[in-house]
Image (cartoon, rainbow, N blue to C red; front, side, top):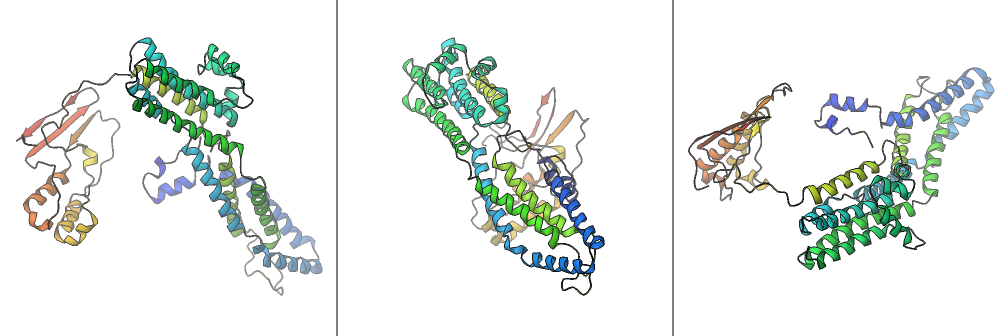
Length: 452
């Protein structure tokens, strides 16, 4: 699975960007350091030969050859070729990622629409979910290297608990010359018919709802399998790879610094080390490595899909939601805002950060209300205190902007010019809540609005 850097870029600061660039795992530096090192060594060898091993006549001939290569380097349209290739590969990768398959919808619909707390009802719900996970495992073990190593044969699926022995006998007894990914789905859909006949599903519409979720899950796996069946034509990645490596092979000569002052292409500054060409190699080679890494995401590289994790997660969540969590809901009790105004609380540290009320872009032309709200937000801006992990109790308070904005809207209704804003904050109600890991305490003071 790829390195997750989202937390590192949660806020856009220059220091965080630099920190992100210095990451090694899964970085462009890790992808291109071998090619960059080989290219730099080869460039240095050619430069040493040109400077110290060639005669004046040979140097003149080499300099003309450098000019020839440099003038024709643009014959390779590397920008266009790489850009088009990466776009196609990223689109295929996105499509495959979107169809990996989460079991949640099937499990939740199965749990809520198939009734019965007896063993028969439990078994029907669990088997429907397990059969869908089994089909997913059958598909993944044929296209994903890591899953294939985990389940090299059907016996390992039985040992893992995805399939039972009598089900494997039934699976082997179904004679088909093609892969039987569809068979567990067939079992799951027939179990829906059984549940309907036994009255565990009360209507055809409910049965169809579960069937449609199974259909969507199966269609996604089918799309992933067809992408593995029909990859991009091999000549396309061959062409892009050949063009990229050929381009930088020519650059070994065309980017040499010319030391003869009388040459047409004499170098103004002899830097010895081609920094710009090295940067170009990192960019283009990194671009190519991005495409090649996404071309088949069902391997064991850092950037590939972790399908073993997905199988474990689907099996665990699916069986839990349709069995242990079946018909197990909290008691229906009034919520904390029952017969009261709704104002969600903030931790004391987060309440110090200003919150801007969005009133619609047309309110910008209304003049005073819009600008006054902006000024209120800026006046309430207070530096946020850093969280103290050792603090056991978190104080919950109302955000100060709530009351001020509500008071403004109530005291100057004419300035809103027909606005349909309805306040949900009672300025007379004062509430400050505190909670800890062990105790949740709620205190109310002030007048209570019984008509809320």
